[in-house]
Image 1 (tube, rainbow, N blue to C red):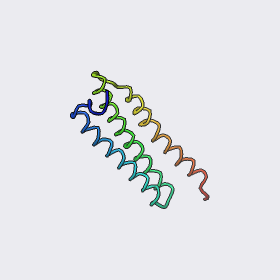
Image 2: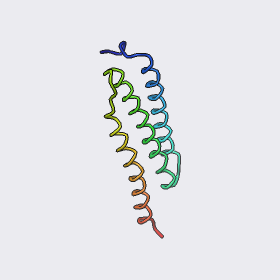
Image 3: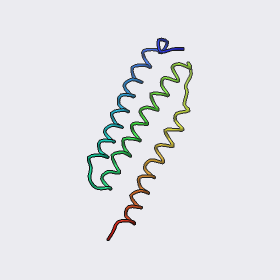
Image 4: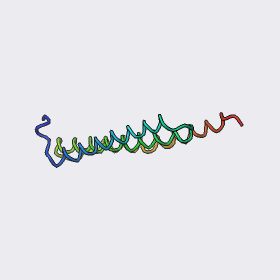
Length: 103
C-alpha cells in the first residue's frame, strides 16, 4: 500500500493533526528559549511535547487504522506513557530546582 491508497477521510484529519502537533512543539520550543526563569521555562516544553506528541500519535493511529482496515490502537499505550511521565518529570525537575536554589 502506498500514499495513493490512503483514503481522503483519513489523510485530511491526519495532515491537520500533524500540522497541529508540529506547531505545538515549535511553540513549546520557543517558550523554552524566550522565558527567563527556570520555573516559567519548564511549562512550555512540557505542554508542547505532551500535546504535540499526542497529535502525532493520534494521526499515526488514524492512518494505521485506515491502511490496515481495522482499528489499530497500539499508539494508545505510547500516548498513555507520555501523558503520565511528562508531568511527573516536570514536577521532579521543579522540586530538584527548589532544593538546589540558593536561599
